[in-house]
Structures are given as structure tokens and as C-alpha cells.
Length: 421
Image (cartoon, rainbow, N blue to C red; front, side):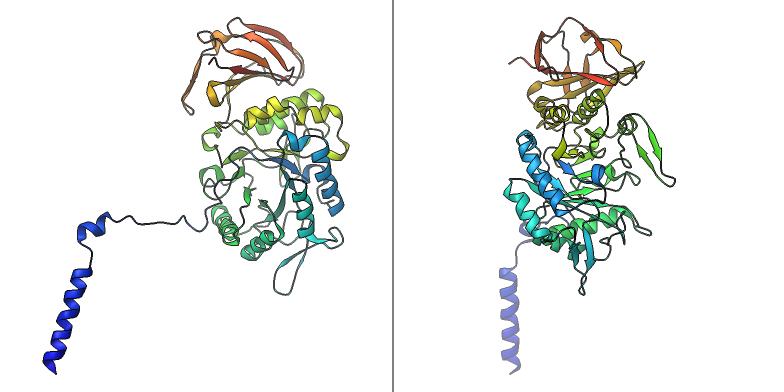
């Protein structure tokens, strides 16, 4: 009996030794590693997202009818054809949670439910976005997602949501990076590709940690419908266009395909002057910022529509190279901005932030530069670029001689420099 057991044991040992991989083989074998569970969905927002959001114009006054009519208007006005995709419903769509904790819509405002509304938006060839908050309550006092992240993400996926804006009100005791990781993990677990917009207001520098968690992150507090002002609400402030513009200094290296700095939504069409609308839109295009309109698309004047659908300016924003522009120089309220583009092209813009018109000169000898971020060089004297005035829609010949003109107050002169081929 002892001999039999010993023989069996020896056989098992020999079998294990023969079947075991050598040490060299074990070291050489590749180890498959899955991305962490909190990584965002890949392959989304490869250019800055374009769409519309309800907050800037309507705030809590949202309804199914408004959203349907806005989707209709996005198609009818040509915005869809110009590249806008997302119809985003901001705060105050929420009802209460059911007995199991699942969020419901406000049935009075959205009588047919969110799934039916999402289906309608999708039928227009558009995508639908929704809003929640990392805290107990949203900024508008509706139920937040804290403690319900996985339930909410599953609900959004079942409704057919394509985009989530995730705010930062009522978040006492939370760490921003951890809270956004949790919702990112929940979205991944839900299984539907959803663009994740981190609306943390820039307080905890999301550009340093947000790239793997979300597709865009707010760099500032809220924008307001003025060009150059600060509105003090007591415990928080809203910022004008140029104030937010200045807050983008030093952030361009964090932006790129699939991960964008977000200086907040557009106020084009919400009471700015025509010059200011044009400058606001052009600046956001140069910043490679998300182009999320915030006006009433159903009652849009032709002048506003012309700004929002200016395809040559949109092309600067949506350029495949995905590099954020930079302020090359600033003197006496006149700024020169440049943005490298795919194929060797450049965008060059003069911005007059003064409240009076100014005589400006675009002197190519003063605009020789190498952008270390993109590794692209611009010398429009040595290389003769074809010049295209984007807002006028006119060709201006080739670069070389200085360009002089009168630039209206708070307006822009914007060129595309087409590289010779």
C-alpha cells in the first residue's frame, strides 16, 4: 500500500514538472491587462463635441415639448448639417426616485418619458445628452447621483443617452477625482458609449487627472451672457467671455482628441452684439473648445444662425490635428492668436478686445514661430500660404506683405493659411 501511494505521488510530481512552463517562457509570456474599470469609453469626442444645451437660455424651464422643438430646429436651421450633434437636457428634468432607488423623470414636464424623447431625437439623426450631479442634489435642487451612480448610469443607458454632463453642487466631503471615477466606472459598466462631461468648474484642476476619466472637463465656473464682466452671486461668480478666455492660459497642453478643455457653453444669440457673437464663436473655435450652443434655436435671427453655422470657422474647431490654439502676442488690447491645423495649414486671428475700433497690422515678419506642442513651424514670409478670410468668405492672395485694416470693437479678423502642396 505504501509503495503504491509513493509511486502515484512520484508520477504526479513528474507530470507537474513536465507540464510546467520554463522560467524563461513564463517571463516572456505577455500579460493581458484590461484598462481600469473607471476609464472612459474610448473612441468618442475625437473632435470637440458640438451640440446644444438648455441651461444658458432656459435654466430650469425645460420640457419635452421644448426639447422636441429644439431638435426639429437643429435640423431645420442647418445646424445639424454644419456638424452639431447633441441635444443636451440640463438640470431640472428629474422627478423622484422610485422605491428601489431608480431615478424617474418629472412626469408633468416629460409626459412620454425620457426613452420616447431620446428615440425622437435619434430619429432626427441627432444624439441626446442628460445632466446629473456628483452630490446629493443637483444645483437646481433635484436628486443627485451620489450613492446611486451605477443605477443612474444603467438607467441612462436604457433610455438611450449619448452624453452626460456631471455637475459638482452639494458635494460636501467628496474628492472630485474619486467621485468622477465612480461615475465613469458606472457608465462603463452600463455598456453604452456615453460622452462624459466633467463639470467640476476647475477648482481641483481636472485637466491634471481627467483625461482617462472623461472626454471634457470644465476649466472655469459658469459663463454669463456678457462679453466683458463679472456677475457676483454672493458665494459664486459668473464670468464674461473675455474673463473665461484669460482663464485658459497654460492649459492647452492638456487638450487633444478625446479629451478637451471646456471653457463652458456658448452665449452666442443670448444678447451679445453681432461683433461679440462673432468674436466669442471664433475664440472658442481657436481654443478647440466644445461648441455647445445655448440660445433658443427655434427663434434664432439670421445673423445668429450665420455665426453658429459658419462652416469655415467650425472647421478650425473640428480640425483633426486636435491642437488647441495659443495667444502669440497681446498689446494695447489687440491679440494675435494662432492654431496649427492638419496638413500644414494654420489659423491666424487678430482679436480686438477694446470697446473702440482699432487700426491693426498683421505683419508676417513678426509672426515667425515654432509651436513646441505640435512641433509645427510657421513662417509666412519664407513659405507663401494662400490666405482665406473666414468670416468674409474671401480669398486674399498669398502671405508675404503685411495686412492692414480697421478692426471693429470686440471683433476678430480670422484667416486660414493654406499650405502649398
